[in-house]
Length: 166
Image 1 (cartoon, one colour):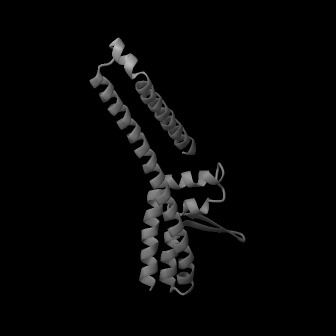
Image 2 (cartoon, one colour):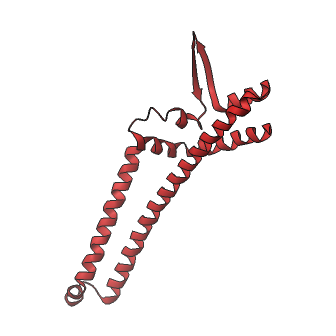
Image 3 (cartoon, rainbow, N blue to C red):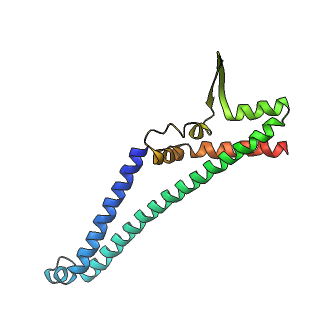
């Protein structure tokens, strides 16, 4: 996922660089292009408009990616804060509420000897694996994007459990 994201960013940067170079070429060689008949004035204007539109669409894609990353980080922080609050509610909950909270967070709990093994539900997996990231501190964030819809669903369900406990 991280490699794919990096490749897309590099490809967009290359495209933006090519477009900027084309625009610079049109601006610096405008007179030559007109004299040789390679371009008419209308063609130069339309080509500049096309390149400008292409450049702005690439920049919009980049901004949308940044916004998605910010929203994902915000959701991960919110989920982490909800987990902190759930600890308090869990301690004061009745057995049915404890079971509901446990089922929401964990998909599987097993005891082997004196060891408790667990598997988190999909929305909580990024938080459980945040210390075992494959590629360093930025890799964890790229893993979050792939799990974004599950994180949002977990926030909603866990928030409703906390609200019902009030």
